[in-house]
Image (cartoon, rainbow, N blue to C red; front, side, top):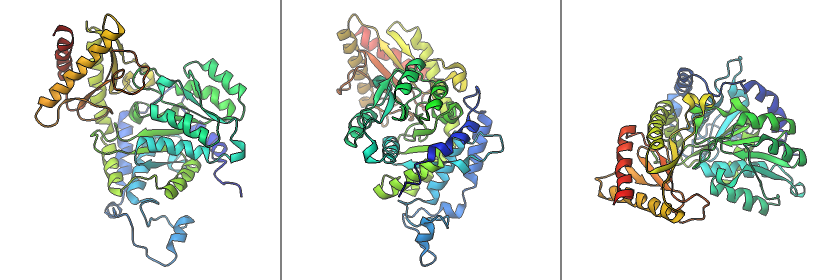
Length: 440
């Protein structure tokens, strides 16, 4: 029997054209905030209290009705919950609610949530893979951004696990070279399962333009899968540019506290329904309705939090551009591509040094200074040596000294600004750190 979800992309293509805009990559902040608040207020206060994992049934045989979608309710959190429904509606409103042509995005677009951003990525990849029959997998593969533009754990899925399922290894490609992309797609008709990338990858923040990729991919019916975590829908709404499936790690900006993990996939209803079916069976789901409720509440504060992160990052970037201890700063001005041209709350910088070994030694010294200050602080330190971003505190991370395999240049520091400190406070800390590194 043919899988009824196989045709999700052909049905989606026409609607996708209505989501795309000619040149605007985000809507007004006022509309963004209003839309989220309105959607959140529609969540029934009675349903808000239904946070149990298992919900009482009201009649015999009701589970079958729910499976056949004859009733819009829930009975067990692995299958879904009222809190999760609310969060998914908010995510759709954030990513695609801007539509003003009389369309209701909730009719064609939905979302699904996961226990982490990485779980969301793996869910999408395996979901697409499972739509391809075993006997047809040889020769098929994903196109992905170059190695430094992709998170390392994502690489493991695309290169190791996809091969174990019978697919060809993913092909790395410079997605900023549209001619190369067109050549690869032309040479592989029907064999590319999707194009996956991060529009703004860490740590070098080399921007990839979804609009330009869409102009080429549309001729070959290849889905575009975007991990938009570093920009968030506040800075850039990827459906406007032509993305088909959007992934967000809610652990970062959508939480803004660094205390809960979560991931989200927003996309065509046909594909997300398939994804949810797989999730229900394998248990790759958000662990509690309480977590879903928490993310929904925090999503309302995304605009105000992002304004703090982006303001701090811009101030620190300006300082570093003229700092005598810094060789290069990675924080692009994205101009009209994002709100206020911002690249978000992460920036990277390369320390000066007389050689690669010297730069690496100074990278270690700077991180040791951060660790020392953290150890002597009272309670939670304002500045920490730590992975992740989008938290309350400002986080430092050494890209060439973390101990795992890396191609990062020596002396490269990734700085994730916090929201508890202002730009001036972060700069003052950096000045002290540079003094320790270069004058001790």
